[in-house]
View 1 (tube, each protein chain N blue to C red):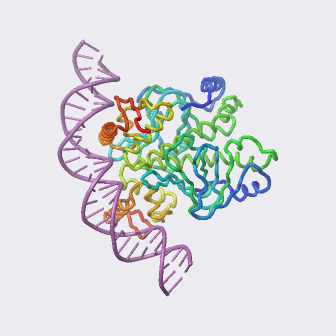
View 2 (tube, rainbow over the protein chains, first blue to last red; view 1 turned 90 degrees about the vertical axis):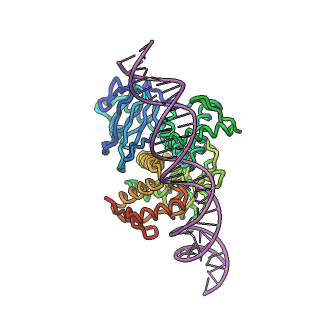
View 3 (cartoon, each protein chain N blue to C red; view 1 turned 45 degrees about the horizontal axis):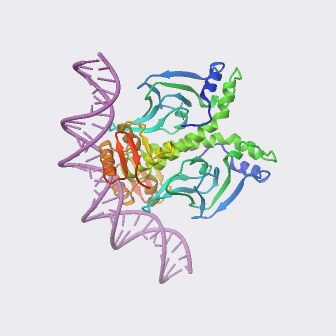
Length: 210
Length: 210
DNA sequence: AAATGTTTGTTGTTTTTGCAACAGAAAAAC
DNA sequence: GTTTTTCTGTTGCAAAAACAACAAACATTT
């Protein structure tokens, strides 16, 4: 995700003042946080990639959301309980800011520039978040695996300003993200290729229609 | 959705000052807005019920979101284009505030209390919005119609603090909301009843498990 | 109160998806 | 540089969901 938010400047501010915020580092495959009860935890991913995943009772794994630089997440967005376990897992090395959502609105004892910067840029981060969630819902409401794939490819193509692009997931993860069975998805990918809707070399896709 | 936002007070403020905001009324089945291009339109539903619906090329209708009192919606949350038509349709009589998202951050010429009230309560409305979207994604990522139904019923039961509750949609709309075929959903409802997971009288559901 | 339209409930058939299992390719670990 | 693990690609079969079509119940309009 790209926006005008300058993370370097932000981090500089952070380092020099604020005592209400934790900055933590995580390695690949570590659990950043689990959504257990509402501690109003609010996180900003400063660098790296992470997924919010759910493991249901049948052992199905679903990628509820995929986070990259500047994305926000946290328990504060999940006020109503779920029966399933929700975890945020680091896919790469990650730097994360963690704090209590309601601390943003109250100034810290040091009255620091970090708070100022944060409250200034937070609306933008939140707007991006809502846009992402809405797009995700649009994808997930598509009825067939084919429509989900084409919808997602369309999105990637638009973002890359190119008919050719690389899927930023493993195909296994893509299936979990689109919430479909992997083998069924692979079959559909093959059909899309056979019917000349797309071209495919590994994770590189080219849209052939329109 | 319930929160501490006082709409009456809000409307009072609005009436007495702000010139950047339109308040409009819609009748049942009227189109409140269509998401065509990005005009940064931002809306607050003050009263009534409305749905964001998509009609795809096959004529499938999907309820992308369902809005009730205090919900926010608008093009500003859909920056990337979709191929399908997205419409917000009034399900009942609706009162809606409509304005440009970026006008919230700049004070109006009258420097009115409306802006003050809005910027005070907006974070709360937005937090609710994100919570709703996240719950919707959790529902939609469930693999089977059964899990979607039970997940949704669970939600309604939690909200109503009661094992018995009424589905706030027509069953036709519920299918569109869960993004499944209506007849398949009806069949699944019958199975859930036969297997004593739920009791069902028309749109009144009782959870029998746990 | 009759007529029209919409929603609910149902079922047979077709299509799509999920499940399971496996082999080869690629990546990661040692 | 070899071993181990994960990922990709494929397929047969079973299960689930979509499609289609219709009648009865319920609402709405006139």
